[in-house]
Amino acid sequence: MFETRKKTAAAWFKSLRDDICAEFEALEREAPADLFPGEAGTFVFEPWERKVENGGGGTGGMLRGRFFEKCGVHISVVKGEFEGEMRERVPGAKDDPRFWAAGISLIAHLHNPHVPCVHFNTRYIVTTQDWFGGGGDLTPTQAKDRVQTSPDAIAFHAGMKAACDAHEVADYEAFKKGCDDYFHLHHRDEARGVGGIFYDRFNSGDWDADFAFTQDVGRHFKDTYAAITRGRMNEPWTELDREEQLIQRGRYVEFNLLWDRGTTFGLKTGGNIKTILSSMPPVVKWP
Image (cartoon, rainbow, N blue to C red; front, side, top):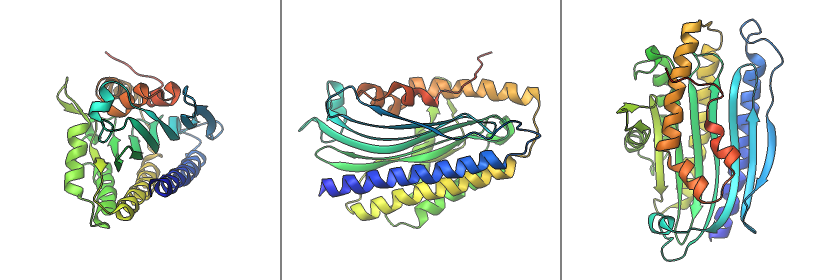
C-alpha cells in the first residue's frame, strides 16, 4: 500500500515542480525591460544525494534572473532512520525509526519591492504511519501591503480558500489559523507576512481525498501567485522601497533560522544544506 502511494506522490511533486518552473520562467520573460533590463533567467537544476547509503536525494532548481532576484524550487525523495529526539517527536518513529519523505519546496525573492515574497511546500511522509503536510504563505515587504485588507492578501487567501473549499477533508479556517500561528516571530511578537494556509500531519483516513486536496493546493498556489505578480510587475520603485524590502527580509531570515521546523528537519535528517538554506534572501539588512 505505502509503496504505491510513495510513487504516486513523488511523481506529482516532480510534475508540479515542472509546471511552476515553466510559469516562473514565463514571468521572467514577460517582465518589462525598462524596469528589469537584461536577459531573462532560467532555472538551473542540480541533483544531490544524501550522505547516507541508499538515502535518496533530490534536485535543486535555482533561478537568478532579472525579475526573480532569487528563486528556489526543489524536489526530494529521501529515506533513512530518525535518531535521538526525532524518534520521540515524529509520529510512528518511536515504534520504528525508519522514514521515507518526498516533497516540493519553493521560496521566491523578487527584485521589485512591490511584488511580495512567497513560500510554498507540500510533502508526503511515511513512518509506520503516513501523512501530508504543507501550504503556502505570502510575505509582502512593504508595510502598506502587510495588512489583511491589501489586494494581494485578499487574492492569495481567496486562492488558498478555493483549494480548501473544493475538498470535504480540508478545513480552510483551521489551516488559515495554523498558518498564522506557525509563521509568527515569537521573539518579536509579529507575523512574518499576511499568511495563507498551513497543515501538518494531515491524515483524514482517506488517502485519495488527502492527496487530491494536496494537489489542488499546488495548482491554486501557482495560478494565484502568478496572477499577483503579473498585476504588480509593472510598478516602479524607489530606493526607500528597496530599503524597506531589505529590512523586512531580515525578519524572514530570523524566522527560518529560529523557528522553521522544515529547516530543522532537513538539517537533522542529512538533507542538502544548499537547498535547505536557499530560502535565505540574497541581500538583506538589519538596521
